[in-house]
Image (tube, rainbow, N blue to C red; front, side):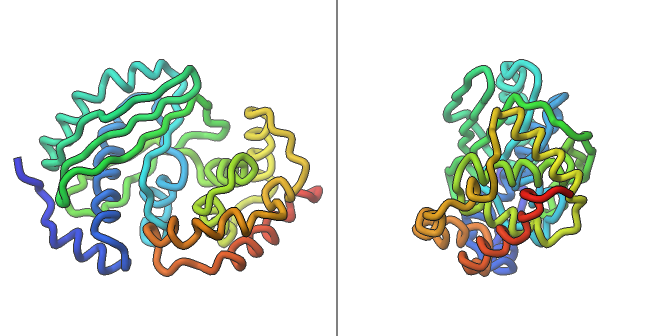
Amino acid sequence: MDLLIDKRELLDKARERNLTLGIIEKDYVLGWMLIGLGKIKGLTFKGGTALSKVYFPRLWRLSEDLDFVFEDDFNIIAGELAEIFDRIWRSSGIKLRLKAQHSNPEYLQLKVQYDAVLGKNWIKIDVTREAPIDRILSRKLSQRYSDYPPFKVRVETLEEIGAEKIRSLVERKKCRDYYDVWQLTKLTMNKIRLKTLLNKKFRYKGIEFKGLDDMFPSDLLEILERYWERELARLVYPVPEMKKVISDVRHHLEFLEKSI
């Protein structure tokens, strides 16, 4: 079966966003994978890709993976993959196969190979056993590509995604997390609610937040500098200046050290 989408459509999207055809193709495949996985009961979409695919499809950076939370047995997900892959192939022409699977009681990672416009590549799917702490919404998937069917997905609230993104600044030091929080600080969100959700996120992971230095250590710029352009240039154009992003984020998160 041939791909149903015209390669020219993907080329047009690549030109519009000044990104490579490869990352646009991956974004396209991620959407189909989301449509397939989104039919699993109880699987809830989260993370930066949710910001791109659901909340701000025209504004947000693109992604290279899908993130979910799930409270049930991970074997339920693994057991449905063959049917999901077949359904996606019949609907889009994309060939999929499970390349690798890693799991423990709290985490499942799937590496899925796809064969599409440019040949074979792979995407990553991460599922954590962390119950949402805010309400779950049903939101429409962006119709970014012409062959996507109308589809609604279970997704965390914007505030919960924001709280988790902020928590990630303590847990790890990744360029895309600082970029995402920088973008989130441009939005109007209830700081009291955001701080409440963040504190719950900290408690769940057993993290004792001592202050902004946990997120902005003295060597942060040195840590990020070698990856900043390389990591973000694949996903967004233009790439913002690193020092400005870090300075802006720290300024906007000062409320975390204050009583609101």
